Image 1 (cartoon, rainbow, N blue to C red):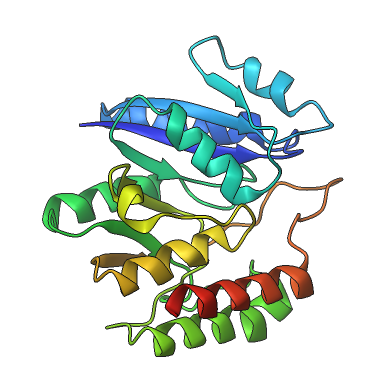
Image 2: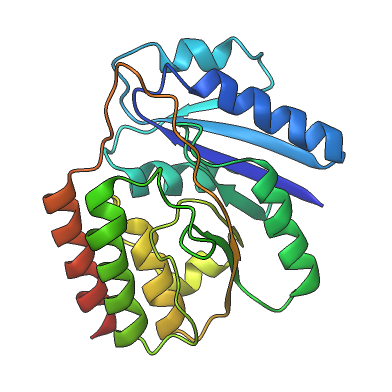
Length: 231
């Protein structure tokens, strides 16, 4: 088993070093072959410099096209292994949960996407208040209802594992944060199996920088993506 871990980054100088170090420790301990690809998406701080401190074995690639989805797709294109995992660069996701996704894949080899669900265990205090009370649950409900999902999916969760080959089926187009929702929508539309595991979102390491999510704008784009992908 070999895996490419994609970390999309824009101005993550406060967190990218500990994120990479933790991933390396977890995967070295588990003795799983892996590569880490940091996708710098037009950072204006020292994100690249902090990532480079780890060593030359960390692959750092530039993505000029702005947007979360654009960065992930660029990283996937550069990946050496057929299995990829996407994880945020702000330390909010625990790399040990990637191992749980790998276990899910071992137990359910015929599924297509393996992802976390931040709402399953009720520990959601580290999701922004409006997002956890209204925004994300509403968008999840619309997605799950419109696509007649077999269970309630956390369609905006940024921790997921899949094989690159499914992208040919999905034909993903969104460059922004709605990329994550588009993947779930098109997977459901194409009858691809999605399996989830409960995860707990950690408090990210941002002190001087702020979230790149624009609540109203990104929520509108996500809703537009949900509807347009269905019809």
